[in-house]
Image 1 (cartoon, rainbow, N blue to C red):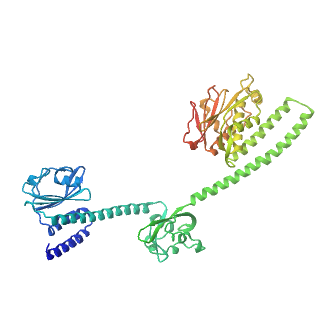
Image 2 (cartoon, rainbow, N blue to C red):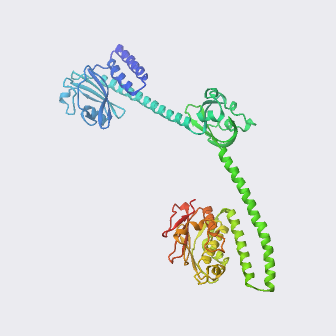
Image 3 (cartoon, one colour):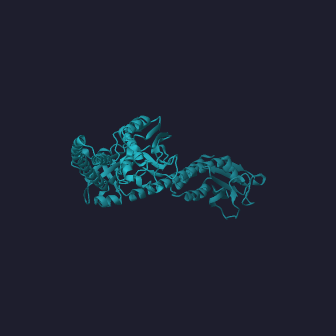
Length: 520
């Protein structure tokens, strides 16, 4: 190649690159490319196609006259072969090329160049052998430039879409949000969203480019997390703060979200989540807990103390004489004492003192010793340990055993007398292991399906002498342990309580027509 032509070619390639760099869409790139290539290579027709849905779709053309043609499949013709083999193909005589599918019989040679794995640039000539090795190199250079420019535009378009999506998210997030940058060690505001404007009462334009410390002035600047945490580009932090707003001081959860920019600058977002309602609910809960503690104190002291005095006088009276009336008073005192214990247990709302590995077998047998059972019998087939608060598990078993014994008598006495003679029940109870829990069943009359939901509600009892709180406490203890209670009919027709660890992912156990409790 003569030196003058070489210099001209270099200049023309430079002009081509400059021309394509001004394009802001891929279609513009294709349109510029098929025109600018005239300065590099002699041809009669230039066309750019890309693969779309199994066909080669024309994207740009430089022709004197368009020739109608059927759509070309991506595997057909010289263009399809070029795309499939990803290599440049030069055909000197199309009449002798089997793969050729000419758009016009007047074309005799073609230069076909792939680009970007999905595109083909084709130059056609009416002369045989029109394209030289230099033309091939220039064509491949053109394809490389088109590929690079197209990649840049694709990246910029995707970046723009991401920026638009993020801007929409930033604007529409319900929390007050601020975008910042750090210049010369100073945190400056880039943008704020509408929620920030409403919350803090600033105008959108008056805060942009202002230092953050001018917006939030705490009592002690050294403790201002907006300044402390934003200096660390890799540190994402959550901290509670109180900030002056348009309606006065309010508590917020402040989140610092740093953003990796790749250019060495530090940028990020400060997000303020209003905690006013949450703090108010916490204060209300504290007030309720205080009232509950006072109530528990009254129950524990103001009721139990006179009951202890009454029990003392009752013991003195029974030492001197025995009568049915005194026995009934004793049972009433026992019931009052149990009622106080149950109310105090309810006041704890199932709270635990910490979990440890506890033997189901040993705990069930110990609970059985604490319940007046006489003729009732217990069978334990639960040789396993579980994570539990031992004291609360013991109370759970005691309440279940007492419930079965007191409600399971099959004697012929009246309900009132039977309720007063709980220890006479000859019911049989069984404690057994389950794959992810344990079960307690009895052979008593069971609980009717229509009443199974009600048994876990305060005050439910089928006998007037009971407190109606035993199974409520069972439900609370189960919930505190993360267990589900499934109340069903046992194999012998009695009540069956199944306890399953919800962390196992299974909340329904064996049994039929049951009611599940503990998901509230």
